[in-house]
Image (tube, rainbow, N blue to C red; front, top):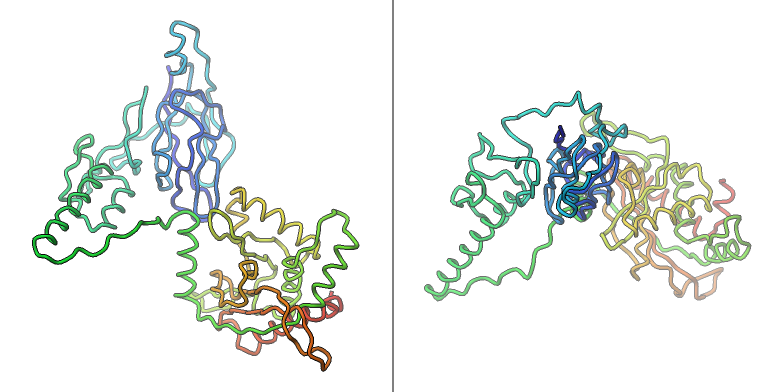
Length: 445
């Protein structure tokens, strides 16, 4: 006899509490094997394919594509054991069914792991895990999810609660059309439309025009939501200050051209970003105060031994900051190769949460957008960020004569708790000196 097992959304690491369903990779009635990816989700960090730890027949899926589920909510149920796939029963009635894999995965994602299925028993809990936006389609397993016994209203979907909260709707006044009076998303949307109609009618009766309706709403979730939260937290917690300087990058560009003309073992071109990243690691070796973080609870500045260099990368999914691990141990070519690899993964949406966290200092090249200067917001909980504007020909006094030189504006935003302006200015001046005279960097290597 088949045993129906429930697979819940696992903890995908880095303290993530929710994920959005981007694409289902299996259908109800389909046979899945142990560790087969069953759904693609987007977290606040990256796109992730989630493997199922069970082998069997999918009997239910929970959540529609585009909906958001909290960690621990049911993803799907699988009938484990000798059972005929639902699809085969429908298409070739009477034929011999395929035997599905019994057992479970030996692989582990953060927050879940499985043992032998015989030892796993489903527990009936008085308060079930949150359900998806709309009820799942169940074939052989009973519907899961009932109204929470202690809930003041008959709704268990966090998305439904959020939608009502955004529109100022009291859920106690909404009649649910779901099972046992459960309030569904369609019920809330109908109530919102009704409320909008009443407001419009009231405005017509009083002669007062109704305020313009919003042109649209964009959910702050996934990568966009994570960036919004991190930037807001940075502004709330970090007393930041910014200093900047113009630098003559003519010699740096000439050094890059010479390096690329000579070629490298890997055949890759050296980018300006790679050169600036190497300059940053040299500057942080001289000014380690800026490679630190603040522990507010302990009231301590924590100096960090290694440099894990983040760099801002713009993708179709928004701004992400991949991290070059152990940048202080790499030369320019190694840093450049890693930047290229991480940038390609970012554009393909394949960066893992681990590749987007753990940075100790960030390099932000906003010059690619055609702007000269900016005051970057520190990537919390780091202590500083170097911003780089576009490199453009400008009039510049060189060796006592007015000349046209390649000039760039550099800006450093720093946490004033970890150092004063003298240290920050010393760091920025050293970076500018290396940009103007790359030989300065070569002498320190």
